[in-house]
Image 1 (spheres, one colour):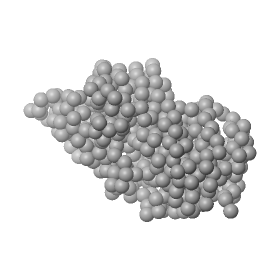
Image 2 (spheres, rainbow, N blue to C red; image 1 turned 90 degrees about the vertical axis):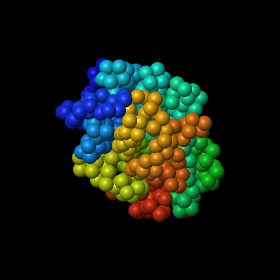
Image 3 (tube, rainbow, N blue to C red; image 1 turned 45 degrees about the vertical axis):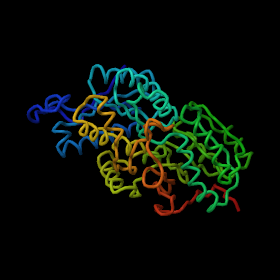
Length: 410
């Protein structure tokens, strides 16, 4: 397997050995492994966000006098390649913590290895409920795993919460079709959709699960049009840009609203040749909203360095590097158990909100606290080439608008 390795720092001597147990020479960098899908829009954002954080930490003096080094691996969207990368990171490259993947299947494959190798790991973008459930069910072995994004059930609830204002109150919608890709992360997502959509007043006319390998969406869109729903509620990521491109090409007169991971990157507009116009998707942070004082400065720095607005997993991977650095500093050691203990005490204001992790007794053990004052959701819409936050009202920088081919309820 070809592994790509980059470094946020080329080595140099930074002083004498630190008199802290568990720490090597001050000159030795602290290595953090980043395993991601660098051929995907959402995946490439992960190492980029991490490297930006490392550069900032190093410019400020590092961690206990040691520099952060990002060691990058491409898992090629493969769980098997992800496992091999994880094993190499832990056993050969001697990283002290890992940030891994936005693909639930990859993270779920890595999770047992985090326990076996006692390697602290956090995911910046995978959403499967099982990630945190495993920590809850087998804490002694799985305590090394943290969830740096929302679980699927939580995401669905955020989509529905936004729908109460946007779909029901503003647009007077009454019916919906759920359209999700068949993947681990969408199983709990769809289960929650089917509960929370009727609860807010949207009757679900059909529930369509499609293969992530689907290339022709004509039969799917034809079926949906025949049902005449007011909105299509999406759960798409690995299927790529084709649903959006063909939605526009076929002039499907029904808005798409929900989760679209690829849509979170600013390259999505170019990648769809503008077909993204009108698509509404969930985020926990956005470049046009000061979720915290760190959000907009990070987005601006990311765009300056990489040429595009950060995708959703860039925000989280950036925060994750800071949290690992803080945990290592608090622990005074790179011992994995001490890092985990310090990480569990995290109280950090990042780009996505105030981050605290739930205790081992919670169903979402080592997941982030959600709700007012912690992590909350945004609904963002592509408008004329720009992502515009349209919900919640107090954070909105614009209002929902749609292409001419969209037919809204009377």
